[in-house]
Amino acid sequence: MKYFLLFSIGIFLASCSSSKHFTIDAKTVEVSKNISPDSSIIKLYKPYKDSMDSMLNLVIGYTKVDLVKGDPESPLGNFFTDALLYYVLTNYKDSLYGFSTMVLLNSGGFRTELRTGPITIGDVFRLMPFDNTITILQLKGIDLLKLFNFIAQKGGMPIAGARLLLDAKTCVEANIHNSPVQENNIYNVVTSNYLANGGDNVTIFTDAVKRIDLSVRIRDAFIEYIKVLHQNGIAIEAKKDGRIKYKGFDE
Image (cartoon, rainbow, N blue to C red; front, side, top):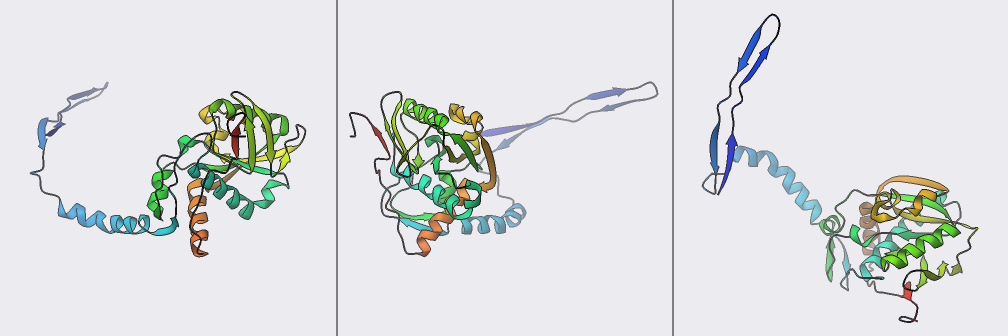
């Protein structure tokens, strides 16, 4: 049983020339299942609800495997970082200035997992309900290696375009697109505006040489990528592929 209190307030306003007094009565209203729905309200919102349900229930792709989270890498993280890398390389190549490019996201940004079967727009909204947008950051290699040390300390993070060999606290070996990271080179890191702004304690991006904020939501990039696969008859078969390994355990 729930109750709402409708309350009264007495207000006395005074000035040099006049005064006014307002009084509102209060009463407690019981809210229960016995209250009938207001048909006029239902009639008002139903067309919008039906339209939204139709959009969210639209199937945009299919996965043959469970897309689940995990550390230091996972099928879910690998698939969606690959999706974001593909999206940026395809649509924003001019913003990359020819530098080698990788993607970094955070596992906490994924609020659920996707099970084998059809994927709907609603599934992607539930996976990533936030309106985080894409940010491209240019980092010197020496700073990128500091980022990889941070990833080692975190126990792994979702990445694409890079392969890392880590020990408990540091990055032992790092390659981007099959080439070792050079301290004096410039690299692109595609990420979320949340991480770019220091979210999840990622502070190294304050040392970025350049920052480009796109107006594209990461969720929308995911939806577009899944649609492209589906239109080409490709089902998702993401898996762990060793892009992050720990020395002595995965070698």
